[in-house]
Image (tube, rainbow, N blue to C red):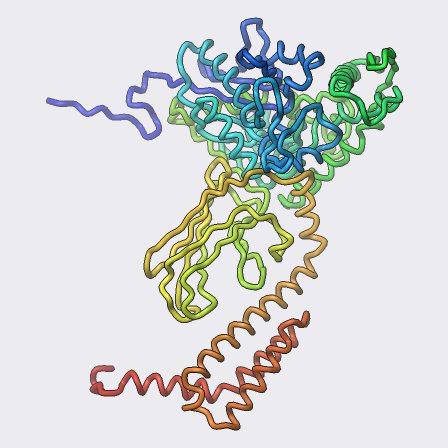
Length: 628
């Protein structure tokens, strides 16, 4: 008798087989890989026992790329071919990259290109290609340690990475030959690590603030943890704020003190950044640190910096992070006393001043039980193990959110939001729209991101067209637009005409991400301009409705106006139409609305006659009982 092989949903057909999976924290300064072995999540070291991999890649003319410590050691002598902090560049346009603060020690080619390319001896490379080399190295470390190929990985990204940055990260993984189970927000990964590893410490339930200050990005997430369900209530942050910015401020200070002008060469810039980073790390454990620079003109410059001066230098950057924390608390509708725990993530949270000010804001000392450098990778490993099917009985559920609202453009340059910000993902929403003109056979779909009511104030994500709409009268066609955001936060948009079934769709893959502070600016603008946005929306809605009435009435008069109206009636209607048309450039919504209603009143008898005429035409030659 043949036997059926049966497995639980989500479990491999051979339950005894453990599928190899890993969690990867692709960081700005350092990256890590972790896995679950014997039920314990742990980061994996290299052959020398080092868990951290510097996120630095050196490219040579006739050699394979060098990743990690050896590349980092060569950065000073070969700055143009050694790329660090590629995560700050990924998913961004060149114009945005140059606004990140300070001068970057690289040579960018084709300044008009949407995606920045860095000129190296190994070729002109994108940040995606640089990141792929880091991912390859981490994956190889995992496979060497575990003794086999990986079934898949979970890669963490900042919660405030937009669609372009998430897609670019996924592209880097594909280039590295990896199957991505999921992109997971870094604060959520940290919550997973704490919730599962430290349940006995009472941190597995309640509301958590995850303060994640890494090398290049800052995230704050407010999460509710309840019986294995991790729900993100609100996410905030700054995609251009991190330890690199502390280094850059300190490096600029050193160059100014050393009387180095803006023309410092790439080697001097890289040397200043390295010296600043070393001093920053020293100041986390000692009261003073020395900075030393060997300058191109042969001068040897040195200075001693104390912790108080360093803290005064970086306080404005910490202020930016705390402002984002307050916004996230407001968005989550959570008061500070309701926060049960504050979790620190990211190497930059080792700075005493950061810990001091976070504690002051939340009124409690933050948790740092797990190494802040490793906590994200550990959480990613736990999620990867679950998604690989190795823990079918686990009830862990992650409910992440999107940082900004998504919608489409409607008539009048207005934004119709389909998915509001802080919506839990994955999510799918649909809404039905219609045509504006008679016989319209195509519709342009413009996908937008932002909190304002007008298209000009939001960010354009994608455009596509739905063609083949049946040529019906205005308002008769039914076009359903659907938005679908997957668990990675990636967006797909589809438009379908419901009567004919024709469909057009697009995967939103913009070529670069949001500019510096653009997300925070969008949210701030939406609050500051809420009143004027509401007025502007009313004006535009009235204009659109007035244009629709005028368009329909002109078409109707052309068809049967002479037959159904006498001269006086037609004159009265046309005068009212002229009066309404004269208000279309007005910024007074009431004036436009009053003129529209006056026209509707003037043509009420005409509309009634048209309806009666249509009914009579339909009944002509028919038996009365046919309509019973």
